Image (tube, rainbow, N blue to C red):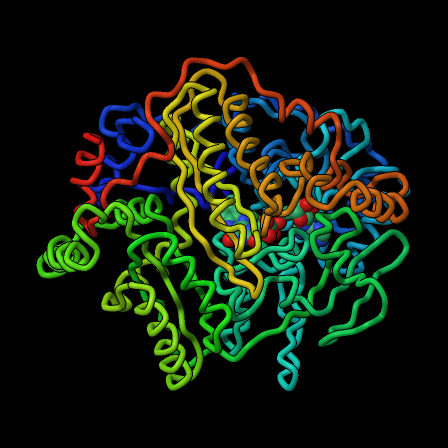
Length: 596
Ligand code: FAD
Protein backbone atom coordinates (compact mmCIF):
# COMPACT_ATOMS: atom_id res chain seq x y z
CA UNK A 1 0.00 0.00 0.00
CA UNK A 2 0.96 3.68 -0.31
CA UNK A 3 3.16 4.74 2.60
CA UNK A 4 0.95 7.78 3.24
CA UNK A 5 -2.55 6.46 2.58
CA UNK A 6 -4.94 3.70 1.63
CA UNK A 7 -4.52 1.35 -1.31
CA UNK A 8 -2.24 1.21 -4.26
CA UNK A 9 -0.58 4.07 -6.11
CA UNK A 10 -2.61 5.66 -8.84
CA UNK A 11 -6.00 4.76 -7.34
CA UNK A 12 -7.98 7.40 -5.49
CA UNK A 13 -11.40 8.92 -4.88
CA UNK A 14 -12.87 11.35 -7.42
CA UNK A 15 -16.05 13.31 -6.96
CA UNK A 16 -16.34 14.85 -10.40
CA UNK A 17 -18.63 12.07 -11.63
CA UNK A 18 -20.83 12.33 -8.51
CA UNK A 19 -22.77 15.58 -8.85
CA UNK A 20 -24.32 15.38 -5.40
CA UNK A 21 -21.05 14.98 -3.54
CA UNK A 22 -19.60 18.51 -3.46
CA UNK A 23 -22.88 20.16 -2.35
CA UNK A 24 -23.25 17.46 0.28
CA UNK A 25 -19.76 18.08 1.73
CA UNK A 26 -20.45 21.82 1.78
CA UNK A 27 -23.67 21.18 3.68
CA UNK A 28 -22.17 18.62 6.06
CA UNK A 29 -18.87 20.18 7.08
CA UNK A 30 -18.84 23.56 5.35
CA UNK A 31 -16.02 22.64 2.97
CA UNK A 32 -16.30 23.91 -0.59
CA UNK A 33 -14.63 21.27 -2.74
CA UNK A 34 -14.93 23.44 -5.82
CA UNK A 35 -12.71 26.18 -4.43
CA UNK A 36 -10.60 24.42 -1.77
CA UNK A 37 -7.03 23.63 -2.67
CA UNK A 38 -6.05 19.97 -2.72
CA UNK A 39 -2.76 19.06 -1.04
CA UNK A 40 -0.31 17.19 -3.21
CA UNK A 41 1.20 13.82 -2.41
CA UNK A 42 3.60 14.08 0.52
CA UNK A 43 7.29 13.74 -0.34
CA UNK A 44 9.07 10.84 1.29
CA UNK A 45 12.46 12.58 1.33
CA UNK A 46 11.03 15.30 3.60
CA UNK A 47 10.15 12.73 6.26
CA UNK A 48 12.34 12.54 9.35
CA UNK A 49 12.97 8.85 9.91
CA UNK A 50 15.03 7.73 12.91
CA UNK A 51 18.08 5.63 12.09
CA UNK A 52 17.83 1.87 12.47
CA UNK A 53 19.52 0.67 15.63
CA UNK A 54 19.85 -2.90 14.35
CA UNK A 55 23.05 -4.50 15.54
CA UNK A 56 25.32 -6.16 13.01
CA UNK A 57 25.08 -9.40 14.98
CA UNK A 58 21.26 -9.56 14.85
CA UNK A 59 21.21 -8.61 11.17
CA UNK A 60 23.70 -11.38 10.46
CA UNK A 61 21.58 -13.91 12.33
CA UNK A 62 18.40 -12.87 10.54
CA UNK A 63 20.14 -12.86 7.17
CA UNK A 64 21.36 -16.37 7.93
CA UNK A 65 17.74 -17.45 8.51
CA UNK A 66 15.89 -15.81 5.60
CA UNK A 67 18.61 -14.68 3.18
CA UNK A 68 19.81 -11.15 2.48
CA UNK A 69 16.87 -10.35 0.17
CA UNK A 70 14.39 -10.84 2.98
CA UNK A 71 15.88 -8.63 5.66
CA UNK A 72 15.79 -4.87 5.30
CA UNK A 73 16.66 -1.68 7.16
CA UNK A 74 15.44 0.48 4.27
CA UNK A 75 13.74 3.69 5.51
CA UNK A 76 10.68 3.44 3.24
CA UNK A 77 10.02 -0.17 4.27
CA UNK A 78 10.47 0.67 7.93
CA UNK A 79 8.00 3.56 7.65
CA UNK A 80 5.43 1.38 5.85
CA UNK A 81 5.69 -1.09 8.73
CA UNK A 82 5.29 1.56 11.45
CA UNK A 83 1.58 2.28 11.45
CA UNK A 84 -1.75 0.94 10.34
CA UNK A 85 -4.23 3.12 8.44
CA UNK A 86 -6.15 4.94 11.14
CA UNK A 87 -6.84 8.62 10.71
CA UNK A 88 -4.34 9.32 13.47
CA UNK A 89 -1.74 7.25 11.59
CA UNK A 90 -2.32 9.07 8.33
CA UNK A 91 -2.28 12.54 9.90
CA UNK A 92 0.99 11.78 11.64
CA UNK A 93 2.67 10.25 8.65
CA UNK A 94 1.57 13.08 6.33
CA UNK A 95 2.52 15.65 8.96
CA UNK A 96 6.03 14.31 9.54
CA UNK A 97 5.12 13.38 13.13
CA UNK A 98 6.60 9.89 13.11
CA UNK A 99 8.03 8.74 16.39
CA UNK A 100 9.62 5.29 16.69
CA UNK A 101 9.91 3.17 13.56
CA UNK A 102 10.88 -0.53 13.47
CA UNK A 103 14.62 -1.08 13.00
CA UNK A 104 14.41 -4.17 10.82
CA UNK A 105 11.79 -5.64 8.51
CA UNK A 106 12.08 -9.37 8.00
CA UNK A 107 10.11 -11.70 5.71
CA UNK A 108 10.17 -15.40 6.63
CA UNK A 109 9.29 -17.96 3.95
CA UNK A 110 7.57 -20.42 6.25
CA UNK A 111 6.83 -21.45 9.80
CA UNK A 112 10.28 -22.95 10.38
CA UNK A 113 11.96 -19.64 9.52
CA UNK A 114 9.42 -17.78 11.66
CA UNK A 115 10.37 -19.98 14.61
CA UNK A 116 14.06 -19.26 14.10
CA UNK A 117 13.43 -15.50 13.86
CA UNK A 118 11.31 -15.50 17.01
CA UNK A 119 13.90 -17.51 18.94
CA UNK A 120 16.76 -15.29 17.78
CA UNK A 121 14.81 -12.11 18.55
CA UNK A 122 13.87 -13.24 22.04
CA UNK A 123 17.45 -14.34 22.71
CA UNK A 124 18.60 -10.83 21.72
CA UNK A 125 15.76 -9.28 23.79
CA UNK A 126 14.42 -7.57 20.68
CA UNK A 127 10.77 -6.60 20.14
CA UNK A 128 8.77 -8.53 17.53
CA UNK A 129 5.76 -6.91 15.88
CA UNK A 130 3.93 -9.29 13.52
CA UNK A 131 2.75 -7.49 10.37
CA UNK A 132 -0.11 -8.69 8.15
CA UNK A 133 -1.50 -6.17 5.68
CA UNK A 134 -0.93 -3.09 7.84
CA UNK A 135 -4.60 -2.12 7.54
CA UNK A 136 -5.60 -1.96 11.22
CA UNK A 137 -7.08 1.24 12.56
CA UNK A 138 -6.60 0.53 16.25
CA UNK A 139 -2.97 1.62 16.60
CA UNK A 140 -2.09 -2.08 16.81
CA UNK A 141 1.25 -1.90 15.06
CA UNK A 142 2.99 1.27 16.17
CA UNK A 143 6.04 0.76 18.37
CA UNK A 144 6.10 2.54 21.72
CA UNK A 145 8.00 5.84 21.24
CA UNK A 146 10.17 5.14 24.27
CA UNK A 147 11.21 1.62 23.15
CA UNK A 148 15.02 1.37 23.27
CA UNK A 149 15.33 -2.26 22.20
CA UNK A 150 15.71 -3.29 18.57
CA UNK A 151 12.29 -3.59 16.95
CA UNK A 152 11.68 -6.23 14.30
CA UNK A 153 8.63 -5.98 12.07
CA UNK A 154 7.92 -9.58 11.11
CA UNK A 155 6.04 -9.39 7.82
CA UNK A 156 4.06 -12.55 6.96
CA UNK A 157 3.71 -11.49 3.32
CA UNK A 158 5.52 -14.54 1.91
CA UNK A 159 3.18 -16.99 3.67
CA UNK A 160 0.18 -16.72 1.38
CA UNK A 161 -0.87 -20.19 0.25
CA UNK A 162 -4.09 -22.11 0.78
CA UNK A 163 -2.30 -25.30 1.84
CA UNK A 164 -5.10 -27.80 1.91
CA UNK A 165 -8.88 -28.15 1.87
CA UNK A 166 -10.71 -30.86 3.80
CA UNK A 167 -13.69 -30.95 1.47
CA UNK A 168 -15.70 -33.27 3.70
CA UNK A 169 -15.56 -30.83 6.62
CA UNK A 170 -15.31 -27.56 4.67
CA UNK A 171 -12.05 -26.64 6.40
CA UNK A 172 -9.20 -24.85 4.62
CA UNK A 173 -5.65 -24.51 5.97
CA UNK A 174 -4.39 -21.08 5.00
CA UNK A 175 -1.03 -19.44 5.65
CA UNK A 176 -1.43 -16.38 7.85
CA UNK A 177 -0.03 -13.80 5.43
CA UNK A 178 -2.55 -14.52 2.67
CA UNK A 179 -4.43 -11.34 1.76
CA UNK A 180 -8.17 -11.33 1.05
CA UNK A 181 -8.29 -11.35 -2.77
CA UNK A 182 -5.42 -13.83 -3.04
CA UNK A 183 -6.86 -16.39 -0.64
CA UNK A 184 -10.40 -15.96 -1.97
CA UNK A 185 -9.16 -16.60 -5.52
CA UNK A 186 -7.35 -19.74 -4.42
CA UNK A 187 -10.52 -20.92 -2.70
CA UNK A 188 -12.83 -19.87 -5.56
CA UNK A 189 -10.68 -21.79 -8.05
CA UNK A 190 -11.62 -24.90 -6.10
CA UNK A 191 -15.30 -23.96 -5.68
CA UNK A 192 -15.10 -22.53 -2.15
CA UNK A 193 -15.41 -19.16 -0.44
CA UNK A 194 -14.37 -17.97 3.03
CA UNK A 195 -17.38 -15.66 3.34
CA UNK A 196 -15.29 -13.08 5.25
CA UNK A 197 -15.29 -9.71 3.50
CA UNK A 198 -14.26 -6.76 5.69
CA UNK A 199 -14.19 -3.40 3.87
CA UNK A 200 -10.39 -3.67 4.08
CA UNK A 201 -10.47 -7.09 2.36
CA UNK A 202 -8.15 -6.05 -0.47
CA UNK A 203 -5.24 -5.23 1.88
CA UNK A 204 -5.66 -7.34 5.01
CA UNK A 205 -4.59 -10.88 5.88
CA UNK A 206 -6.12 -13.92 7.53
CA UNK A 207 -3.55 -13.66 10.37
CA UNK A 208 -4.46 -10.00 10.89
CA UNK A 209 -8.18 -10.82 10.90
CA UNK A 210 -7.64 -13.36 13.67
CA UNK A 211 -5.28 -11.10 15.62
CA UNK A 212 -7.83 -8.25 15.61
CA UNK A 213 -11.09 -10.28 15.82
CA UNK A 214 -12.30 -8.93 12.53
CA UNK A 215 -15.80 -9.05 11.09
CA UNK A 216 -16.85 -9.07 7.46
CA UNK A 217 -19.97 -7.59 5.91
CA UNK A 218 -21.56 -11.04 5.38
CA UNK A 219 -21.14 -12.04 9.02
CA UNK A 220 -24.89 -12.60 9.47
CA UNK A 221 -24.48 -15.81 7.46
CA UNK A 222 -20.81 -16.77 7.82
CA UNK A 223 -20.04 -15.41 11.29
CA UNK A 224 -17.22 -13.17 12.45
CA UNK A 225 -13.62 -14.39 12.11
CA UNK A 226 -13.96 -15.71 15.68
CA UNK A 227 -16.53 -18.19 14.33
CA UNK A 228 -14.78 -18.85 11.01
CA UNK A 229 -11.25 -19.53 12.38
CA UNK A 230 -11.37 -23.05 13.82
CA UNK A 231 -7.69 -24.05 14.11
CA UNK A 232 -4.39 -22.17 14.34
CA UNK A 233 -0.64 -22.52 14.55
CA UNK A 234 1.14 -19.83 16.54
CA UNK A 235 4.92 -19.56 16.81
CA UNK A 236 6.10 -18.76 20.31
CA UNK A 237 9.60 -18.73 21.83
CA UNK A 238 10.91 -22.29 21.72
CA UNK A 239 7.80 -23.90 20.22
CA UNK A 240 4.60 -23.70 18.26
CA UNK A 241 1.11 -23.63 19.72
CA UNK A 242 -1.05 -26.03 17.74
CA UNK A 243 -4.82 -25.73 17.93
CA UNK A 244 -6.52 -28.37 15.82
CA UNK A 245 -9.65 -27.35 13.91
CA UNK A 246 -12.54 -28.59 16.01
CA UNK A 247 -16.23 -27.83 15.56
CA UNK A 248 -16.39 -27.21 19.31
CA UNK A 249 -14.62 -28.32 22.47
CA UNK A 250 -15.01 -28.08 26.23
CA UNK A 251 -11.30 -28.27 27.04
CA UNK A 252 -11.24 -25.48 29.61
CA UNK A 253 -10.96 -21.74 28.92
CA UNK A 254 -10.46 -21.44 25.20
CA UNK A 255 -6.84 -20.93 24.12
CA UNK A 256 -8.22 -20.34 20.63
CA UNK A 257 -10.19 -17.41 22.03
CA UNK A 258 -7.05 -16.09 23.72
CA UNK A 259 -5.29 -15.90 20.36
CA UNK A 260 -8.31 -14.26 18.73
CA UNK A 261 -7.82 -10.53 19.22
CA UNK A 262 -4.35 -10.95 20.78
CA UNK A 263 -2.80 -8.39 18.33
CA UNK A 264 0.56 -10.14 18.19
CA UNK A 265 1.03 -10.20 21.97
CA UNK A 266 1.00 -13.98 22.34
CA UNK A 267 3.08 -15.01 19.34
CA UNK A 268 3.09 -15.09 15.56
CA UNK A 269 0.16 -16.80 13.84
CA UNK A 270 1.55 -18.72 10.88
CA UNK A 271 -1.49 -20.72 9.83
CA UNK A 272 -5.24 -20.57 10.29
CA UNK A 273 -7.73 -23.32 9.47
CA UNK A 274 -10.98 -21.68 8.49
CA UNK A 275 -14.49 -22.87 7.82
CA UNK A 276 -15.16 -22.49 4.10
CA UNK A 277 -18.39 -22.81 2.12
CA UNK A 278 -19.32 -23.83 -1.39
CA UNK A 279 -19.74 -20.71 -3.57
CA UNK A 280 -23.47 -19.95 -3.41
CA UNK A 281 -25.41 -20.47 -6.63
CA UNK A 282 -27.16 -17.18 -6.13
CA UNK A 283 -26.26 -14.00 -4.31
CA UNK A 284 -28.36 -10.86 -4.52
CA UNK A 285 -28.16 -7.63 -2.55
CA UNK A 286 -31.53 -5.86 -2.44
CA UNK A 287 -32.12 -2.26 -1.43
CA UNK A 288 -35.12 -1.17 0.64
CA UNK A 289 -36.33 2.12 2.06
CA UNK A 290 -37.82 2.67 5.50
CA UNK A 291 -39.79 5.73 6.59
CA UNK A 292 -37.38 6.27 9.50
CA UNK A 293 -34.58 4.75 11.61
CA UNK A 294 -36.83 3.31 14.32
CA UNK A 295 -38.90 1.34 11.79
CA UNK A 296 -35.70 0.09 10.17
CA UNK A 297 -34.06 -1.04 13.41
CA UNK A 298 -37.26 -2.75 14.52
CA UNK A 299 -37.33 -4.69 11.27
CA UNK A 300 -33.66 -5.70 11.56
CA UNK A 301 -34.35 -7.06 15.03
CA UNK A 302 -37.39 -8.96 13.82
CA UNK A 303 -35.33 -10.47 11.02
CA UNK A 304 -32.69 -11.62 13.50
CA UNK A 305 -35.39 -13.28 15.63
CA UNK A 306 -37.12 -14.91 12.66
CA UNK A 307 -36.45 -18.01 10.54
CA UNK A 308 -35.03 -15.82 7.79
CA UNK A 309 -31.25 -16.00 7.40
CA UNK A 310 -29.96 -13.27 5.08
CA UNK A 311 -26.19 -12.85 4.78
CA UNK A 312 -26.24 -9.03 5.15
CA UNK A 313 -28.70 -6.95 7.14
CA UNK A 314 -27.68 -3.34 7.08
CA UNK A 315 -29.58 -0.11 7.54
CA UNK A 316 -28.22 3.42 7.26
CA UNK A 317 -29.74 6.20 9.31
CA UNK A 318 -31.22 9.23 7.52
CA UNK A 319 -27.91 11.08 7.46
CA UNK A 320 -25.95 8.15 6.06
CA UNK A 321 -28.76 7.58 3.56
CA UNK A 322 -28.30 11.14 2.33
CA UNK A 323 -24.55 10.54 2.08
CA UNK A 324 -25.07 7.28 0.17
CA UNK A 325 -27.29 9.00 -2.36
CA UNK A 326 -24.89 11.92 -2.64
CA UNK A 327 -22.02 9.61 -3.61
CA UNK A 328 -24.05 8.03 -6.42
CA UNK A 329 -22.76 8.53 -9.91
CA UNK A 330 -24.75 10.75 -12.23
CA UNK A 331 -27.64 8.84 -13.75
CA UNK A 332 -28.95 9.08 -17.27
CA UNK A 333 -32.26 8.76 -19.13
CA UNK A 334 -34.99 6.63 -17.66
CA UNK A 335 -32.87 5.63 -14.70
CA UNK A 336 -32.43 9.30 -13.79
CA UNK A 337 -36.13 9.95 -14.18
CA UNK A 338 -37.10 6.93 -12.04
CA UNK A 339 -34.62 7.67 -9.25
CA UNK A 340 -34.97 11.44 -9.34
CA UNK A 341 -38.69 11.89 -9.86
CA UNK A 342 -40.73 8.69 -9.63
CA UNK A 343 -39.18 7.25 -6.47
CA UNK A 344 -39.37 10.47 -4.43
CA UNK A 345 -42.96 10.89 -5.61
CA UNK A 346 -43.86 7.37 -4.41
CA UNK A 347 -42.10 7.93 -1.08
CA UNK A 348 -43.72 11.33 -0.68
CA UNK A 349 -47.17 9.80 -1.24
CA UNK A 350 -46.44 6.97 1.19
CA UNK A 351 -44.75 8.80 4.03
CA UNK A 352 -45.43 12.51 3.38
CA UNK A 353 -43.28 14.91 1.36
CA UNK A 354 -42.13 16.66 4.50
CA UNK A 355 -40.80 13.39 5.95
CA UNK A 356 -38.41 12.52 3.16
CA UNK A 357 -35.47 13.72 5.23
CA UNK A 358 -36.08 10.81 7.61
CA UNK A 359 -35.96 7.96 5.13
CA UNK A 360 -33.38 5.26 5.63
CA UNK A 361 -31.84 2.96 3.03
CA UNK A 362 -31.23 -0.67 3.83
CA UNK A 363 -29.22 -3.37 2.04
CA UNK A 364 -30.11 -6.99 2.62
CA UNK A 365 -28.41 -9.91 0.89
CA UNK A 366 -29.71 -13.40 0.20
CA UNK A 367 -27.41 -16.28 -0.67
CA UNK A 368 -27.71 -19.96 -1.46
CA UNK A 369 -29.78 -22.00 -3.89
CA UNK A 370 -32.27 -19.93 -5.92
CA UNK A 371 -35.16 -21.48 -3.95
CA UNK A 372 -33.52 -20.72 -0.61
CA UNK A 373 -32.68 -17.13 -1.60
CA UNK A 374 -36.23 -16.58 -2.85
CA UNK A 375 -37.80 -17.94 0.34
CA UNK A 376 -35.54 -15.79 2.53
CA UNK A 377 -36.46 -12.72 0.54
CA UNK A 378 -40.17 -13.45 0.86
CA UNK A 379 -39.88 -13.80 4.62
CA UNK A 380 -37.83 -10.61 4.98
CA UNK A 381 -39.95 -8.47 2.66
CA UNK A 382 -43.09 -9.42 4.57
CA UNK A 383 -41.50 -7.98 7.72
CA UNK A 384 -40.30 -4.88 5.88
CA UNK A 385 -43.77 -4.14 4.54
CA UNK A 386 -45.36 -4.77 7.93
CA UNK A 387 -43.13 -2.01 9.31
CA UNK A 388 -44.02 0.42 6.55
CA UNK A 389 -40.94 -0.17 4.38
CA UNK A 390 -40.74 -0.01 0.61
CA UNK A 391 -39.78 -3.23 -1.23
CA UNK A 392 -39.95 -2.15 -4.88
CA UNK A 393 -36.36 -0.97 -5.38
CA UNK A 394 -34.76 -4.28 -6.41
CA UNK A 395 -31.10 -5.07 -6.79
CA UNK A 396 -29.87 -2.00 -8.72
CA UNK A 397 -28.52 0.02 -5.75
CA UNK A 398 -27.41 -3.26 -4.12
CA UNK A 399 -25.20 -4.01 -7.11
CA UNK A 400 -23.68 -0.53 -6.79
CA UNK A 401 -23.16 -1.02 -3.05
CA UNK A 402 -21.37 -4.29 -3.77
CA UNK A 403 -19.18 -2.64 -6.40
CA UNK A 404 -18.30 0.45 -4.33
CA UNK A 405 -17.68 -1.19 -0.99
CA UNK A 406 -13.93 -1.64 -1.45
CA UNK A 407 -13.51 1.85 -3.00
CA UNK A 408 -14.97 3.84 -0.12
CA UNK A 409 -11.74 3.72 1.96
CA UNK A 410 -10.07 5.98 -0.64
CA UNK A 411 -12.49 8.76 0.32
CA UNK A 412 -10.69 9.35 3.61
CA UNK A 413 -7.44 10.21 1.84
CA UNK A 414 -9.28 12.58 -0.44
CA UNK A 415 -10.79 14.42 2.54
CA UNK A 416 -7.38 14.61 4.20
CA UNK A 417 -5.97 16.12 1.00
CA UNK A 418 -8.66 18.79 1.41
CA UNK A 419 -7.85 19.41 5.09
CA UNK A 420 -10.75 17.46 6.56
CA UNK A 421 -10.97 14.49 8.89
CA UNK A 422 -13.20 11.56 8.03
CA UNK A 423 -13.08 8.60 10.37
CA UNK A 424 -15.10 5.83 11.98
CA UNK A 425 -15.91 4.38 15.40
CA UNK A 426 -17.94 1.24 15.76
CA UNK A 427 -19.51 -0.66 18.60
CA UNK A 428 -22.06 -3.32 19.49
CA UNK A 429 -24.90 -3.21 22.00
CA UNK A 430 -28.01 -5.16 22.94
CA UNK A 431 -31.14 -4.40 20.89
CA UNK A 432 -32.67 -2.72 23.92
CA UNK A 433 -29.84 -0.15 23.95
CA UNK A 434 -29.21 0.48 20.26
CA UNK A 435 -31.34 3.60 19.87
CA UNK A 436 -30.02 5.01 23.13
CA UNK A 437 -26.42 4.47 21.97
CA UNK A 438 -27.19 6.01 18.60
CA UNK A 439 -28.66 9.17 20.13
CA UNK A 440 -26.02 9.43 22.85
CA UNK A 441 -23.19 9.23 20.32
CA UNK A 442 -24.78 11.95 18.20
CA UNK A 443 -25.12 14.21 21.23
CA UNK A 444 -21.55 13.49 22.34
CA UNK A 445 -20.18 14.21 18.87
CA UNK A 446 -22.06 17.51 18.69
CA UNK A 447 -20.73 18.54 22.08
CA UNK A 448 -17.23 17.69 20.93
CA UNK A 449 -17.63 19.70 17.71
CA UNK A 450 -18.88 22.63 19.79
CA UNK A 451 -15.84 22.30 22.00
CA UNK A 452 -13.48 22.30 19.03
CA UNK A 453 -15.47 25.10 17.41
CA UNK A 454 -16.05 23.41 14.07
CA UNK A 455 -19.00 22.33 12.00
CA UNK A 456 -19.01 18.56 12.19
CA UNK A 457 -20.90 15.68 10.66
CA UNK A 458 -21.83 12.28 12.02
CA UNK A 459 -23.80 9.44 10.44
CA UNK A 460 -24.38 5.81 11.22
CA UNK A 461 -25.49 2.41 10.07
CA UNK A 462 -26.42 -0.81 11.78
CA UNK A 463 -24.91 -4.05 10.49
CA UNK A 464 -23.79 -7.46 11.83
CA UNK A 465 -26.92 -8.70 13.64
CA UNK A 466 -26.90 -11.18 16.51
CA UNK A 467 -29.71 -12.69 18.57
CA UNK A 468 -29.20 -10.18 21.35
CA UNK A 469 -28.06 -7.07 19.50
CA UNK A 470 -26.07 -5.60 16.64
CA UNK A 471 -23.15 -3.43 15.59
CA UNK A 472 -23.55 0.33 15.18
CA UNK A 473 -20.99 1.93 12.91
CA UNK A 474 -20.46 5.71 13.04
CA UNK A 475 -18.66 7.84 10.48
CA UNK A 476 -17.69 11.36 11.48
CA UNK A 477 -16.09 14.25 9.64
CA UNK A 478 -15.01 17.83 10.19
CA UNK A 479 -12.55 20.32 8.76
CA UNK A 480 -9.44 20.65 10.88
CA UNK A 481 -8.89 23.98 12.53
CA UNK A 482 -5.44 24.41 14.08
CA UNK A 483 -4.31 21.18 15.67
CA UNK A 484 -5.61 18.09 13.83
CA UNK A 485 -4.58 15.47 16.41
CA UNK A 486 -5.88 17.43 19.43
CA UNK A 487 -9.16 18.17 17.66
CA UNK A 488 -9.48 14.56 16.50
CA UNK A 489 -8.87 13.35 20.07
CA UNK A 490 -11.75 15.44 21.38
CA UNK A 491 -14.23 14.03 18.89
CA UNK A 492 -13.01 10.43 18.87
CA UNK A 493 -12.76 10.29 22.67
CA UNK A 494 -16.25 11.69 23.12
CA UNK A 495 -17.68 8.99 20.87
CA UNK A 496 -15.73 6.18 22.56
CA UNK A 497 -16.75 7.42 25.99
CA UNK A 498 -20.40 7.51 25.05
CA UNK A 499 -20.13 3.84 23.96
CA UNK A 500 -19.10 2.64 27.41
CA UNK A 501 -21.42 5.10 29.17
CA UNK A 502 -24.35 3.56 27.33
CA UNK A 503 -23.57 -0.14 27.77
CA UNK A 504 -21.96 -0.60 24.38
CA UNK A 505 -18.51 -2.09 23.75
CA UNK A 506 -15.39 -0.13 22.84
CA UNK A 507 -15.15 -1.88 19.49
CA UNK A 508 -17.13 -4.54 17.63
CA UNK A 509 -14.42 -5.44 15.09
CA UNK A 510 -11.47 -3.03 15.06
CA UNK A 511 -9.77 -4.40 18.16
CA UNK A 512 -8.17 -2.47 20.99
CA UNK A 513 -4.58 -1.63 20.02
CA UNK A 514 -3.59 1.68 21.56
CA UNK A 515 -6.57 3.56 20.16
CA UNK A 516 -9.20 2.02 22.45
CA UNK A 517 -7.12 0.71 25.36
CA UNK A 518 -7.97 3.67 27.61
CA UNK A 519 -11.54 2.34 27.84
CA UNK A 520 -10.66 -1.34 28.33
CA UNK A 521 -11.34 -1.31 32.04
CA UNK A 522 -14.76 0.27 31.53
CA UNK A 523 -15.42 -2.45 28.95
CA UNK A 524 -14.33 -5.58 30.85
CA UNK A 525 -13.93 -4.30 34.47
CA UNK A 526 -10.78 -4.01 36.57
CA UNK A 527 -10.77 -7.76 37.22
CA UNK A 528 -10.94 -8.40 33.50
CA UNK A 529 -7.89 -6.20 32.95
CA UNK A 530 -6.10 -8.12 35.72
CA UNK A 531 -6.76 -11.44 34.02
CA UNK A 532 -5.56 -10.10 30.70
CA UNK A 533 -2.46 -8.56 32.24
CA UNK A 534 -1.68 -11.93 33.82
CA UNK A 535 -2.13 -13.65 30.46
CA UNK A 536 0.36 -11.39 28.69
CA UNK A 537 2.85 -11.18 31.56
CA UNK A 538 2.92 -14.93 32.14
CA UNK A 539 3.36 -15.74 28.47
CA UNK A 540 5.76 -12.98 27.54
CA UNK A 541 7.59 -11.95 30.69
CA UNK A 542 10.12 -9.69 28.93
CA UNK A 543 7.41 -8.12 26.75
CA UNK A 544 9.06 -9.05 23.48
CA UNK A 545 5.77 -9.43 21.59
CA UNK A 546 4.15 -6.20 20.42
CA UNK A 547 4.28 -4.58 23.88
CA UNK A 548 1.94 -1.74 24.83
CA UNK A 549 -1.08 -2.97 22.88
CA UNK A 550 -4.53 -3.79 24.26
CA UNK A 551 -3.79 -3.10 27.92
CA UNK A 552 -4.31 0.47 29.09
CA UNK A 553 -0.95 2.16 29.30
CA UNK A 554 -1.05 5.32 31.39
CA UNK A 555 1.39 7.00 29.00
CA UNK A 556 -0.79 6.64 25.95
CA UNK A 557 -4.25 6.76 27.43
CA UNK A 558 -4.18 9.76 29.69
CA UNK A 559 -2.96 12.47 27.32
CA UNK A 560 -5.14 11.12 24.52
CA UNK A 561 -8.26 11.66 26.60
CA UNK A 562 -7.38 15.12 27.87
CA UNK A 563 -9.24 17.93 26.18
CA UNK A 564 -7.50 21.09 25.08
CA UNK A 565 -9.05 24.47 25.88
CA UNK A 566 -12.50 25.01 24.44
CA UNK A 567 -13.18 27.45 21.67
CA UNK A 568 -16.23 29.23 20.32
CA UNK A 569 -19.35 27.10 19.76
CA UNK A 570 -19.89 25.55 16.35
CA UNK A 571 -21.97 27.21 13.73
CA UNK A 572 -24.10 24.25 12.74
CA UNK A 573 -25.42 21.20 14.53
CA UNK A 574 -23.93 17.77 13.84
CA UNK A 575 -27.34 16.39 14.62
CA UNK A 576 -29.09 18.61 12.11
CA UNK A 577 -31.47 16.67 9.93
CA UNK A 578 -29.95 15.13 6.86
CA UNK A 579 -30.69 16.71 3.53
CA UNK A 580 -33.86 15.19 2.10
CA UNK A 581 -32.72 11.98 0.48
CA UNK A 582 -33.75 12.08 -3.13
CA UNK A 583 -32.05 9.41 -5.14
CA UNK A 584 -29.76 11.10 -7.66
CA UNK A 585 -31.27 14.49 -6.89
CA UNK A 586 -29.10 14.79 -3.84
CA UNK A 587 -27.57 17.68 -5.76
CA UNK A 588 -30.52 19.84 -4.76
CA UNK A 589 -30.90 18.44 -1.28
CA UNK A 590 -28.23 20.39 0.57
CA UNK A 591 -29.61 23.69 -0.66
CA UNK A 592 -33.02 22.77 0.70
CA UNK A 593 -31.62 21.57 4.00
CA UNK A 594 -29.33 24.56 4.35
CA UNK A 595 -32.33 26.86 4.45
CA UNK A 596 -33.67 25.12 7.57
P1 FAD B 1 -2.20 -5.58 10.57
O1 FAD B 1 -2.77 -4.24 10.47
O2 FAD B 1 -0.96 -5.88 9.82
O3 FAD B 1 -2.02 -5.99 12.07
C1 FAD B 1 -3.03 -5.79 13.00
C2 FAD B 1 -2.64 -6.42 14.33
O4 FAD B 1 -2.58 -7.83 14.20
C3 FAD B 1 -1.26 -6.00 14.82
O5 FAD B 1 -1.28 -5.98 16.22
C4 FAD B 1 -0.35 -7.12 14.35
O6 FAD B 1 0.79 -7.25 15.14
C5 FAD B 1 -1.28 -8.32 14.48
N1 FAD B 1 -0.99 -9.37 13.50
C6 FAD B 1 -1.09 -9.28 12.15
N2 FAD B 1 -0.76 -10.45 11.60
C7 FAD B 1 -0.44 -11.29 12.62
C8 FAD B 1 0.00 -12.62 12.69
N3 FAD B 1 0.18 -13.37 11.61
N4 FAD B 1 0.27 -13.15 13.92
C9 FAD B 1 0.07 -12.43 15.04
N5 FAD B 1 -0.34 -11.17 15.03
C10 FAD B 1 -0.60 -10.59 13.83
N6 FAD B 1 -11.86 -4.51 10.08
C11 FAD B 1 -12.91 -5.35 10.11
O7 FAD B 1 -12.92 -6.26 10.92
N7 FAD B 1 -13.96 -5.18 9.29
C12 FAD B 1 -14.00 -4.20 8.36
O8 FAD B 1 -14.97 -4.10 7.59
C13 FAD B 1 -12.89 -3.32 8.29
N8 FAD B 1 -12.87 -2.31 7.39
C14 FAD B 1 -11.78 -1.49 7.33
C15 FAD B 1 -11.74 -0.48 6.36
C16 FAD B 1 -10.64 0.35 6.26
C17 FAD B 1 -10.62 1.42 5.24
C18 FAD B 1 -9.54 0.17 7.12
C19 FAD B 1 -8.35 1.05 7.00
C20 FAD B 1 -9.57 -0.82 8.07
C21 FAD B 1 -10.67 -1.65 8.20
N9 FAD B 1 -10.73 -2.67 9.15
C22 FAD B 1 -11.81 -3.52 9.20
C23 FAD B 1 -9.63 -2.84 10.10
C24 FAD B 1 -8.52 -3.80 9.63
O9 FAD B 1 -8.58 -4.03 8.27
C25 FAD B 1 -8.59 -5.09 10.42
O10 FAD B 1 -8.22 -4.80 11.74
C26 FAD B 1 -7.74 -6.23 9.87
O11 FAD B 1 -8.15 -7.42 10.51
C27 FAD B 1 -6.25 -6.05 10.06
O12 FAD B 1 -5.59 -7.06 9.31
P2 FAD B 1 -4.12 -6.83 8.76
O13 FAD B 1 -3.70 -8.09 8.08
O14 FAD B 1 -4.04 -5.63 7.96
O15 FAD B 1 -3.32 -6.68 10.12
